[in-house]
Image (cartoon, rainbow, N blue to C red; front, side):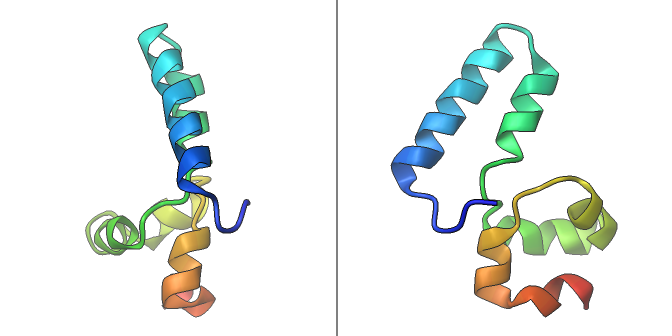
Length: 76
């Protein structure tokens, strides 16, 4: 997973994902969106509301979560 993705890189991926969504490619959209680092505040809410398994098995880019909370946060 890319570390320290720039804002321009994130926006480029989001725009490509939006184009896939608009073209009706929901799977492509989801796959591409999962490459974007999940914001730590969203991961925290998802962990509380949906559960840790969702984060660990969902294929999400958790690089920013691990950078902020530490890699052990995911296993707590």
